[in-house]
Image (cartoon, rainbow, N blue to C red; front, side, top):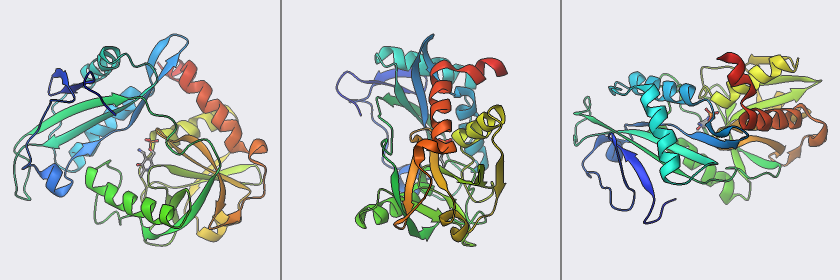
Length: 294
Ligand code: PMP
């Protein structure tokens, strides 16, 4: 992720990643009380572009607010600093990781003060490019009455790590998590769509992270005249689908081959997922929809 030349952005300044330090008595390290983002920059025909930068930093702000961490940063400035960070590290295609974390405080009360760090590195597609074999996890997504499920909070990722490790230990590529009512929810770091009879279905908001890629896919479907339903779906409905895919900033759009070894019947190359995978790639590289929206 970094070497002795790598720079990161830390509380208003660019610093060397290898020598920048922080305290060991903070609520983020001890309790997972912090928020972060995962953002991608692409080398487009008109230069390096951070895809949906505003949406990601707005979500970071919202995540902080939802867990009572004061967000004292200007979003336009964070975006500018993000571009500078890419430049000082000579990065074009890259993954950016902003994190807001807390000052020393061992109590469970509100933070004494907050810090922001943004780092970036070159990262290939998170789940690879092959179709995925998913295992239904024995872990369910946290109940929305226990945490702020719509926030991207550090500590929530213990659930994702447990599910990922369980799936990998069983020889699968990735996990699929249900919610506490046994409806299909999402992956450890990606949202789910499935196709049935030429239409798409995706779990509704409420028990999942509201993915920016998920929203982008829904936008793309409007443009491409693909009907998308958002609802509560059980595992039988998913397994009975024609095809399925995961989507997320790190994963982009990746097809699913099978769930617990039950294969989808539709050839991925002929699926809506494949069509959307190409449309998404095109969008992030050309920034078409973003330009239209501005
Ligand atoms: N769900 C979870 C649990 C995630 O961690 C992610 C990755 N941020 C996603 C879905 C996809 O979100 P996005 O498209 O905003 O990256």
